[in-house]
Image 1: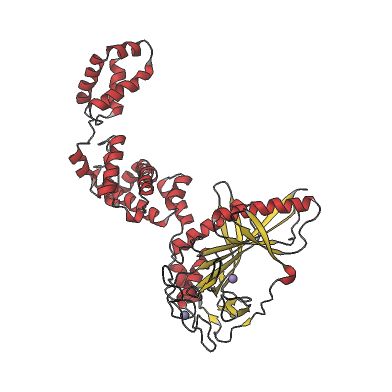
Image 2: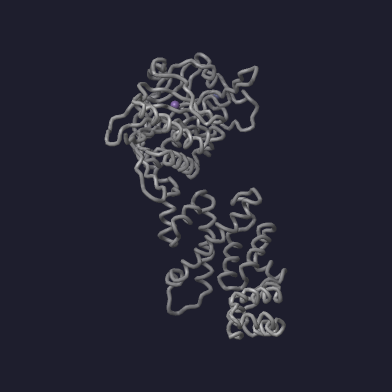
Length: 499
Ligand code: ZN
Ligand code: MN
């Protein structure tokens, strides 16, 4: 039987507002003492009244807009009732029938194809406290209780684990670009549940799904889906497909899913409207205002980088992966452009024509040095691009020396390393370390003649057909010139003289 995989995601994202969802306690519990950021509201004391955090609503609208969701002018908070030690009220304040936003989509581009993923809804709710289970104790830290959450529910539009994984990665990137959350899975700032079922190809109805929880990394999302596909395929082949909905937990050390509960004992949350909060009214004016101030997102940047700079898809993808990198790169480009326009004397060309005729080579050089060399230095030093001592101005100047062939590429690497370590500007480094390239032909010619004179054996072999000795000669030249001679001119001269 030909089976098709049907996957939908439910994702919770902690919104990194200054204060919690319904009280004024700090929402930043990083390295804070347990149970130090609490008050009667987030502890759920009877009679304590919640007050909605407007910033959390704004963050929710930003995220919803990026996912093309329709923002509801009226939405309603409800009580979702259940008992658990991390939930002192006995209910979570959430949204159910009238959520903040509904009916959106995201176009997932995996480099090969574009897949339209429907987004059913994004609603707001508060987080529970954090449980820590040790051998002898169960500990509860209420610092997390009341953290604003955005819950995103997708439609079952994923067909492969890799698509689901990519979507969650893109979602993290969107959160970071929007500055609504770092969405770090390891820290629990982004938590993902996967719903998965199979069906015979051609059918459109849905069969009972398995919900997999406790997925705390991108890798585990993909692995859990792979595992479930295998398991459920076997059940279908044995003519025994899943009869009821189940909840499974992902066991990361065993790399398997484990049954937590089945449908019969599923929760009945007894939703009802939260009497302590008014209906949430959001005007069109406010929605427009928030949408107007949304930053350019990575997907848009990728398209612009390709169009404006002529970059390849993969280079554009790499440079926009992290927002700060794309900003750095753009600053370097604009510095370089300014220089190019002011330095290149031309009576025939307009500024724009000068830039257009040089830009492809320039941007390729800039992106190449950032991606391969600057990233390498940053990674080796466990650093970040926003921490680098190389200012965009100095990086542009560095690219300029290469563009004008003032240094060769092996010395350029040395220069960049010194720039990275000291923050000095490249021309100073070139001067101090005597690294400028010799491109004067007559200077190189003298060295070439010397090398030919001193290596009669190799010259003989070269002339007898061992043409790859050209590398040996150029190597000698680089040694002689302390790596300063322009190797291309050197090679040209050797070939000419040894003919
Ligand atoms: Zn509080
Ligand atoms: Mn939820």
